[in-house]
Image 1 (cartoon, rainbow, N blue to C red):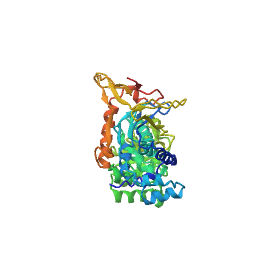
Image 2 (image 1 turned 90 degrees about the horizontal axis):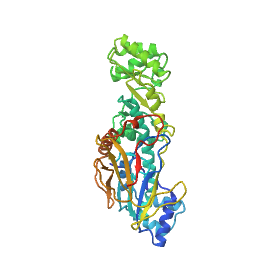
Image 3 (image 1 turned 135 degrees about the vertical axis):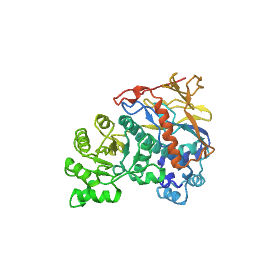
Amino acid sequence: MAVASLLAPALFTDRYELTMVAAALADGTAQRDCVFEVFARRLPHGRRYGVLAGTGRLLDALPHFRFGDDELAALRDQGLTDARLLDWLADFRFTGDIDGYAEGDLYFPGSPVLTVRAPFAQGVLLETLALSVLNHDSAIASAAARMVAAACERPCIEMGSRRTHEEAAVAAARAAYLVGFASSSNLAAGQRYGLPTTGTSAHAFTLLHDDERAAFQAQVSTLGPGTTLLVDTYDVDRGIRTAVEVAGPELGAIRLDSGDLPTLAAHARELLDSLGATKTRIVVTSDLDEYAISGLMAAPVDRYGVGTSLVTGSGAPTVGMVYKLVERDGRPVAKRSEGKRSVGGRKSAVRRHDDDGIAVAEVVSSRPIPAEDGDRNLIVPLVRAGARCSEPSPAEALAEARAHHERARAALPPEAWALSRGEPVLETLDA
């Protein structure tokens, strides 16, 4: 399948990657064997864990990371005219190895979620694309996981497409589904990744008609009585009564998109039951986040629609992953910059569990890690000699990541589920 979400991925990079390659080609260091690692120095303030997402998208893009005639012409137009660099880019193919945490796994400060071993020029060229994909998708997945936890098995619907860039919307839908969202409103996400899509109508459809009854009749006539009717355009009480009159007691659901949602949901449930629509579900939307969802737990709500708070920075703060050189020609290298220190050497990582299978620590070290009962190795092979280790379809890769995430989260200690601010639930240890 073509990676429609990444047009000319080779140009989704920062210029300084190319100037470094040009200088390394000139002085003969471009072929030095190097190891780069992706990790987050810290979690967003108050978060107890992060979720790795985007690995599948990155691996899908890798075979398309090429500099064809159009890309090279674009570089020349921007003043990159070094002949040695352009010739090297024209022949570029990634031939290195990539390892990392399985997509959907949890990460903590210092977790080496992606490791790239390649000649310097090849490895450094992937930095911007890798960070762009992993930072965005992991931020969405980490926020969405908190919402899924707050919903306590009530389904969440991703509906943030209108609040972000059109391609970011597709990636956000994928990341949200990975951590347990039930469906998305985004059709491109459904087409690319096979995730369920859903949607019925907005207030505009009601306002189009002469009255609410006519709008409901048109929708039910087209979609059947199992549809979801939006009942708060004018008056919720009247809207619910009209909805049941039109669709009958088999009405699938009503949607509430404004007002005091806990109070409205309780009233709606009582009214629906009194009208015989005891199986009609209540869906709520309106700028929900994990705290609003948690506040609705006592209300008779069946589904949550989440948009703005999931796909914008307020709900999904940046996870701050970095891409750092940690080894050169087999020797550890590290930054000493104040506040941005790194640890040299390629890392191994295991998650340590107690006798009940509950995670108790993350062990990360550039030295061999002595094995203990209950350890789970976290780093798996992803690419060897430039070729992906497995070739699942985008939908298969997403399904595997979703299942892996469920297993990883099931092993978290109880304090991980708290929405209050706290320290990372697992301590990152050095063996």
